[in-house]
Image (cartoon, rainbow, N blue to C red; front, top):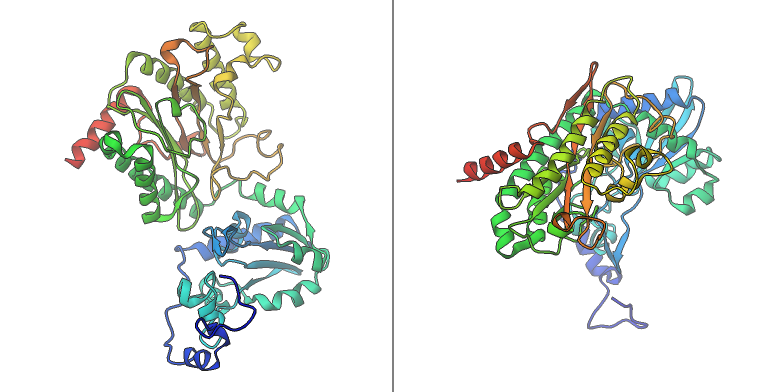
Amino acid sequence: MPAPTEADPKLPRLAEVPAFTQWMSQGWAEPERTPAATPDAAGAAAAHRAKLSAALPGVAFVVAAGWAPVRSNDCFYDFRPHSDFLWLTNCHAEGAVLVGTPSSGGHDYRLFVPAPALPGDPAFFTSAAHGELWVGAAHGPTHWEQALGLPTSPLGALDEALARLSGAEAAGNLDSSMVSTHGLNPSATLRRTLGELRLLKDEWEITELRNSVIHTIEGFSQVINEIPTAIAGGGERWLQGTFDRVARTHGHGPGYATIIGSGHHAPTLHWVRCDGPVQESELLLLDMGVEESSFYTADVTRTFPANGRFTTAQREVHDLVEKAHRAGLAELAPGKNFTAFHTSIMEVIANGLSDWGMLPVSVDEALSPAGQHHRRWLVCGVGHHLGLDVHDCSSASYEEYQGAVLQENMVLTVEPGLYFHKHDTMVPPELRGMGVRLEDDLLITADGYENLSDPLPIDAAGIEAWMAAQAGAKA
């Protein structure tokens, strides 16, 4: 609230009342301050730091977690650390910074975290964003060092450390004043290196992604069971809330804004408003992922008939997307080009649309770089890396991402779809307002791939049976 120009005796500012601040500094027992840590996370982060040291020997660098953005006034969005920072530390402290100083063995790493506002510090009770009385027990440098096995100092010591590293490479959610004060170099090289190191997942990361997919499939099951309530009046938002509750139960929450598209909302690629009704006779597109406590996320999509049975037209569209999906999956193996699954998917889609008389040119012309007419109904990409970010490793170079070959222990999605908007007059009337997407999370193995989301069927008959089984299990 606004501060008065003169002290208001009816509304004294507590931090300016000596008797109160003295009283508030006494009588507090020590709360539990140990940070919650995913098992084996500290060891995984240490291995990640070793990989970075090997990739950039002799380079000093700084990686920042960042701060929560303001939502309005003194209210903030939930804090989520930068993924590069997480990969190197598994620390989720707001404002934390990792510094790597070159040494004979690679790098000496030190983490800097804000000191908690303990009793005796007015911020203990005055800071709604960070005061312990407002937000709960805080973790200080000692607690983080014990949890992570990483030397840790108060954030107040960061300036002195950075003064010795003028020109250090910097990445993450950087504070502009920190960059300018210490002559840091916001580094595309560092960002790219971190993105490329994250392309291959280690055993711990794969376990976290498996758990995320398992919990996501549980979320699908609960959403399917809530369709009758959504049809009766809860609408798309009821289903969005259902999944987000599951995500909050098992981890931090959804790994991205949950997409629930019923009927003519399904063709909208990122329909996150979810403010429409759920129509019993229409398709329901669900694109959802649980972000684990380790911050690794799944990304799974299925398209369901809200009433449990596909119509003839709905099934025809779904079957074409399924055919494209299977063609894409067939291209997943070490040594295959990353673009191979994209090419196979587009060939199936273009041929199917041509068979329906929807292309103004031949299939060959549509598939040519100068054509792409089929992409009118599939303008998005059809796959991406997955990990700490739903679109993981986006700072990697083109040559190491789209221009590379698949390798064992990469995790990616394949997600073809067809999106026929209600107002698109180039679409046959019986198909307008229909959107279908299938998306699986895939681990590249030594001789092919493992479909982590395999428990969710991708064929129309299997989807109908799975929906019925969820309803039966609930009963």
